[in-house]
Length: 369
Image (cartoon, rainbow, N blue to C red; front, side, top):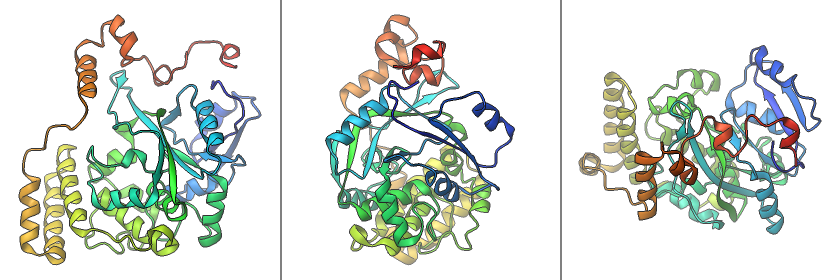
């Protein structure tokens, strides 16, 4: 349904039930190619399997909860041909809350242009990645952008893998670290080109409550917390595991950029608050807090641990968003159910397809350019 034809679509069925193949059988488009794994793979293995099937110059990974806005491929082609040295890029992302039929959380939009890889890594190491101040929307994590096939080939020449590297626990952030290790800068297209839905059932949301059992079982790592000072299923804890693993494997621009352990413990303490709000059990919260205190005291000392705890209990500062962002949110909250307002604000939709700019009931022939 894109207004652009020069692409291939690899559908990788990770040992799913028959519904995936049945859906694919409805298509006769030669741009679509279907593959199925011989067994259930963990996420790193599956991304490696799927992306190795791609033959295009650039690769975008769309998990089953994501879709491209109408016009996204045309815009990307324009940007990538204008900057022909680009090998890693990120784009703006929006979230659609399908349960409520409206747009959801909006990461702060960042300006289009080139960002130095070293600066992005420094931001990851020193700024709370869950805060509005983080440059996380720009990080080239593959799920919010893509890469040139030559970049993945260079990575695979070094270790044999681009996603499924030894010791890593996530394919998105580990690819961000590889991209920054190998490339001096990345391109960010600030326009929102990817729409994500189904957040309530995402791995990230399950991790938010500490539910990592199935993910870790498939991962099969003997010690998934290697290199970090505590063994708890916190998102930032695992991201730091990945950073240290990729730094050791690839070096490059990461060589001298070491973790800021005070920022590490502050970010984990902030994540603890997020987990409490997401419905984690009191028993789990108690165990995690005890582990956090013990590790923080060992690494930073008892006084610093108490200081971080005190600051984490202070009221959160008011949002630092712009006046325009606050005004938009106010109008959407109060008035977007009015049809005239919604036509302007584009906040409420009947489906994710509609939210992404497509006419979901148009005949297929009329969808083609």
